[in-house]
Amino acid sequence: MPNCLEALFARGFEQGFQQGFQQGFQQALLAGRIRALQQVLNQPTVPPRELASKSLTELQAQAAELASLLNPDPQ
Image 1 (cartoon, one colour):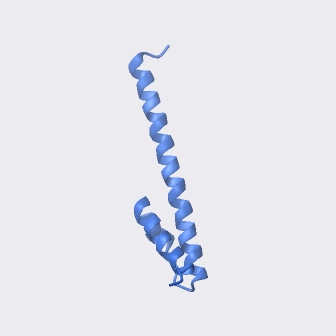
Image 2 (cartoon, helix red, strand yellow):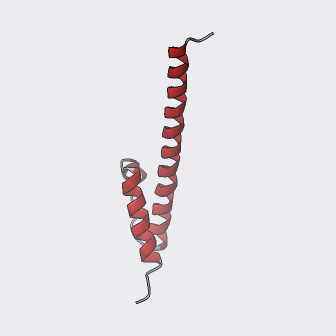
Image 3 (tube, helix red, strand yellow):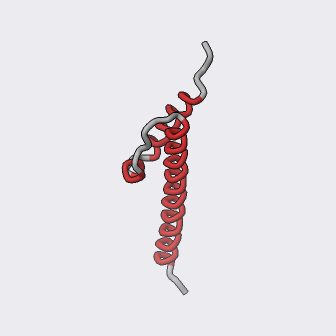
């Protein structure tokens, strides 16, 4: 039977693993969206390695910027 410290370690490991997996999945989705938008907009596509080096926040901002170019607001 695991002691309290082992149980806490196991729980922390599982939570950290889940958070890392979710963030990695979100980053991969955004990278794919960015590359697809670049192709639709006839822009040069960013290499996957460059996208992988960006933070989740940077990827979200880049995806939003490209999406705004696709659907400009009428003025």
